[in-house]
Amino acid sequence: MSAKGDSSAVLSYLSGLTLLKQGAEARVYRGQFLGKAVIVKERFSKSYRHPALDEKLTHRRSVQEVRSILRCRKAGILTPVVYFVDYVSHCIFLEEIVGSVTVRDHINSTKLSEAGNERLKLLAEKMGQILAKMHDEDVIHGDLTTSNMLLRKGSEDREPDLWLIDFGLSYISSLPEDKGVDLYVLEKAFLSTHPNTETLFQILLKSYVASSKKSSTVISKLDEVRLRGRKRSMVG
Figure 1 (tube, one colour):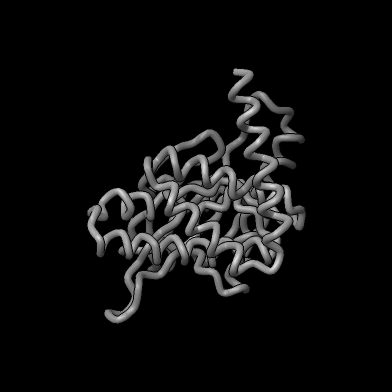
Figure 2 (spheres, helix red, strand yellow):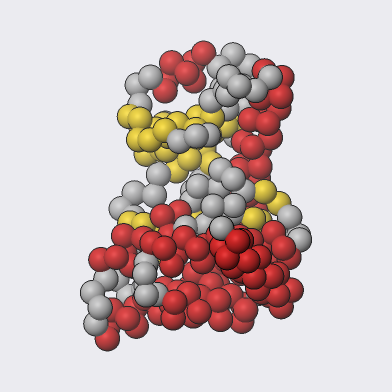
């Protein structure tokens, strides 16, 4: 659902919400909307940009985020429901995944035991499968980290469901290089956040390759991006 017109009511509504964080691109709030727990993302203007350019770029980013979420949901990937979008105030009202934990916290809290390692391997496989499905839909997340993946328990006899969130830098692209860069961003974030987990990331990649219809060219591009990254590190 989207709206255009007077955004004063939306901005007034935001004043009653709890501000969770403010980044370079947006403010994120938590609250209630029509009786549902929501996360509201408000993209704000950048004073250093020309107003017309700023409006155009901010609008495009909001459209890309909503489009990516909807495309993922249509493909069966768990992402938050988009409840409402106001393209004047640049606010997106999203389902809050209540009762979830970030994959980052889950990995860090899982004890290093045989049972714990097996659970993490299964999680890595699931991550690879979901990212393969996302890329096969030509969605580039743009900010893949274990903080932007959530786990929430389903029924007692099932593994927790895995959700993808924060599509603020996402866009649609069929280019293998864009998908390779997406995986490279995740690899760098994964290994810096979770030291000594190279084996887990290799399991993730193996699952990605097995699940994706277009993996060969993507992995080839990933290797190219890795090589460029190593060269830059040596020069630096």
